[in-house]
Image 1 (cartoon, rainbow, N blue to C red):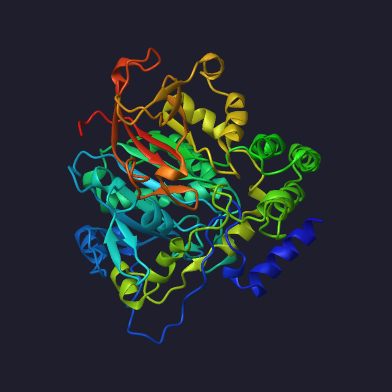
Image 2: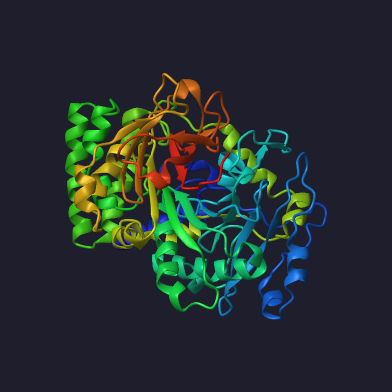
Length: 506
C-alpha cells in the first residue's frame, strides 16, 4: 500500500496537468511550471550568500532592491539565500520594510501552507501591499500588514515557488529539515538587514504552516542561546494550522454533520474511515494514514475525495462558496512575466508548483508538531486563530487538539472562559471570541461572507472589517486580559484574527 501511494503521487506529478488538480485541501495552490522564455531578457537570479560571506553587505542590499513593477511600487528587497551549498539549495525571499517607523516595527516572517504553497499567495492575495488585477498590473491594497510591520515572505521549503535545489537530497523530508533551512536563511537575512536585528521577530503562517511555524520557532529557541547572530524572537501566530492531524482528522465526522455537509448515513461512513486513519497514525503508519484521509477529504492524490463527491464542491476554505475564486490565480501569471522576473531577481528559473515538495514531505503530513508547540507556549507569545468556514482545519477541530498540548498552562486553559471581542467597543456585531492564558491566545472568528470578500477562505479586501490586514485596536476591560496587554492590535485574517502584542499607538 505504501508503494501504491508513492507511485500514484509520482504519476500525478509527472503526467497530470497541474492546473487540473485544483486546490482541494491544505495542499494549497498549485501553479504551472514556467522556465524557458522567448520573451525579453529576465536577467539572472541574485544569490546573496557569496556577498555576505565576503562582507559586501551594502552591495548585496543595493543589488537586492526590487526594480519597477507594473502599476504600483513599494520599496522592497528580494533574492536568494543559499541554505545548503552541497545541494545548491536556495530559499527565495521578498522583504517589505514597514512603511511606518520601520526602525522599531516588529518583523514578521510569513510562511504559506501546502506543503508546497508559495508565500507569493500571501503577498498578493492576502496581506501584502500589492494586489494583482486581471490585466496583470498591480494596485495597492487598502489595508496591509506592511503598513506598520516589516514582513519577510519566504518560499518555503526548498522547491516551493521560486525556491529550488539542484539535488533530490536537498528537499525537506521532515520539520527538522524545514526548521534548519529556514534558520539558515534567517541568519543571513539579519546579516543583510542588521538594522532590524533588535526588532521583535514573529514567525507566522497558516494551514500546513501550522507545522512550519513551530518548526522554525523551536529551531530558534534551541539555537539562539549559543548563536553568533541572535534573533529577537518573541512569538508565533498560526491560522487554521494542521498542527495535530490525529485529533483534527478524528473530528471530521461530527463537524461535517453539524455543518450539514454530510447526512447521518455519510457521517457514519466518515466516522468509520477517520477511526481507521487515526489508528494508523497511532501505529506510525504515516503513508497509509494519509491515503485514508486523502480519499476521504483531501482528494489530492486520489481525486475526487468522498467529501467532494458528497458535496459537489471543491472549495474547502469557505464551505459557503463551492468553487475557488478565479482572481486568486492572477498573481502566479504576474510573477512569471519577464519584466517582473527581472525586477525581483529570479531570472529564468522555474516557478515551482510544489509537487516535488509535497512528494518529499508525504511521510510528514500525518505527524504532530504538538511537542514543539508546547515548548513555544511555555516561553513565548503564541496565537492560534481559527475561522468559522474552513473545512480542513476547522475551528472546532483546532479546539479538539489544543487541550492535549503539553505545557504549563494546560490545566488553566481547560478552565478558562472565552470572551467576545468587537472591532470597536460601540459595535453591535461581535467579531470573534478569545481565550487567553498567560501569553497564549486562542481566537475564534465569527465573520460572515456577507460582510467580507473571501479568497480561498482567507479574508481579502472588503467593506467595514476590510481585509486580512485591517489594523484594529481593541481595549479590553475583561478580567482575563493582563494589564500590560490591555491594548491589543489585531488583524482579521482567514476568517479569524491575527494578533500582535504591540504597545505602539495607532
